[in-house]
Structures are given as structure tokens and as C-alpha cells.
Image (cartoon, rainbow over all chains, first blue to last red; front, side):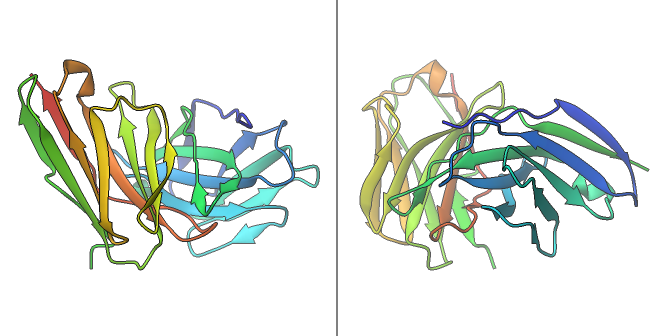
Length: 112
Length: 111
């Protein structure tokens, strides 16, 4: 399993961009980078994923370094509702299933 | 519209009992999962079914038996409940490499 390293916690001011880093130096060529978040007392929520190229959707942007050993999730205009634990996960697809292993993640607090 | 739903939301029961948790997804996904989140908030995969076929079984005790009557449903039956089974159980579904959609969770408390 490719391991990921994330800071345990981060703070960000409301309205500013939140940049969440993730190191995955042992990632292999067939492994995707996924980001999920879990708001208190809710189920995890898929945010975005990527393989090599940077990705953007309505929730966030994912920047993957050229060597793929690290990535950054960007929430462009953070709101109080973005307060959650954010998980960076790297895994291959196995027979149509994603065997995601959740670490401790980064607890992001958005401050008013 | 609820994408992934679970019932019940809360379940309190005594040791030794048998209980079931139901999960349904209306996303048309082929793959469904059960995850367990313990008191330390670690999320661990338990099972995965693809088109009603078991493809991931993460060395879960055989007291846990998933059943998939069709690809929209994945139920979890637990026999002889133990104190250590207390956790939040999440159902999820996915299609290919796209992200997983998780249900709201079932908080199981074994007394």
C-alpha cells in the first residue's frame, strides 16, 4: 500500500483558499490519488481524484507534482461548511473496486 | 434524492444478539462496500461486492456476513454481537475509478 502523510491539522480563514498538502512518495504508476472529507457525524464525501494531470471540479482543484510524489488539494474560497477531516488516499483499482485505506487525515478548521 | 441510504441509523443491542443493517443505492453503481469506523475514527474497509459477487473481504470475522440480493442492495448481518463490534458502519458504492458515495452511517452500540 502506498502510504500518505498529511499534517494532522490546519486552519484557514473563511473566504481564503485552503491548500491541503499530501505526500505519497511511494506511489506507483497505476495508483490514483483520491481526496475525501468527513464532516462531523456524516459519511465520507468524495471530493476529487487524479492520476497524473491536475484536476478541477465544482468542489476543489487537485494539483499533482510531476513526479507524483505529492499533491495539494485546493479549496478556492473556503466556507465554514468546509470544516472537516480531509483524507488523501492513493490506491489502484482492483477488479472494478476501489480498496481505499483511510489514514488519520488533516483536520481543517475554517475560522470566521 | 438519497443516493446511498442505510437503515437503521442507530442500533443499540445486547451482546450475543444477531442484527442486520440494510443498504441501498439508487446510483446504478456496480460496486458496493461496507466500512467500519471505530472509536478512534479510523475507517476500514470490510467488504466489497461487484455485481453481487464478493471481491474484497478484509479478514473480517465470519460473524459478519454480507448479502447482496441485487446490485442496488448490500446488507450486513452480524451474528453473536460483541462489545468490540460497537462502531459506525458505512455503506458505499462506486462505479469504476470514480469516487465512492457513502451512506450516512449506522451507529451500532453493543451493551
